[in-house]
Image (cartoon, rainbow, N blue to C red; front, side):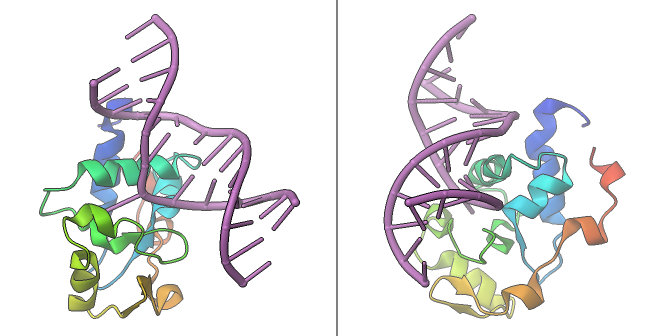
Length: 115
DNA sequence: TGGGTGACGAGTC
DNA sequence: CGACTCGCCACCC
């Protein structure tokens, strides 16, 4: 940890800490781990996380609460099903209560543990 | 070693 | 309103 090669690890660590039934955005995670302009890298990291059971990638959406990465979930509605199974309402590939369910890492986690 | 890539985000037209 | 463009930067080939 605390190395550039652990960029993905930081992302995964934050994703692991996303509470059940809550969601966050790639940009929020990026800023939290000190890569404010690297939101794309978070998505890139999630792409590499496919196959990791403990990484709830479906809880990470884009800034609009859109299920942009659903195609990478193996199926077409797998991501939606996972979200709905957690009580998150998804309409037209978008989280309905996005503002209500949004979980900001910077408000619940200690940055010093990730940088 | 160098260049292409992309599950984003913010700004612009 | 929506559609488009650009910057960003760690990773892969």
